[in-house]
Length: 89
Image 1 (cartoon, helix red, strand yellow):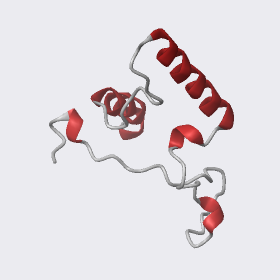
Image 2 (cartoon, helix red, strand yellow):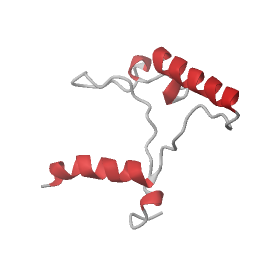
Image 3 (cartoon, helix red, strand yellow):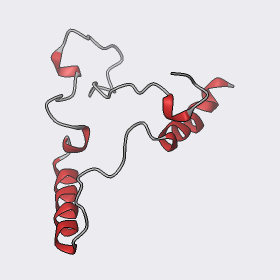
């Protein structure tokens, strides 16, 4: 892996759910998200919308899918870099 290819940037898994506490106790299970569910299924309302969209795809004859993007797409890396850049000045 190298930083010259945007598709090869390391991806850190989203495992925390506590972004407000001034100090995190990593031994506390309450600071971690529910790892038994994908990130897209953590919010019940969002999951409901995704399932409805998938149902509509099936009905229209399109190949159905639940999530339409991949977490390591170069676009996401660029979006992160643009947001992170001001912190490096």
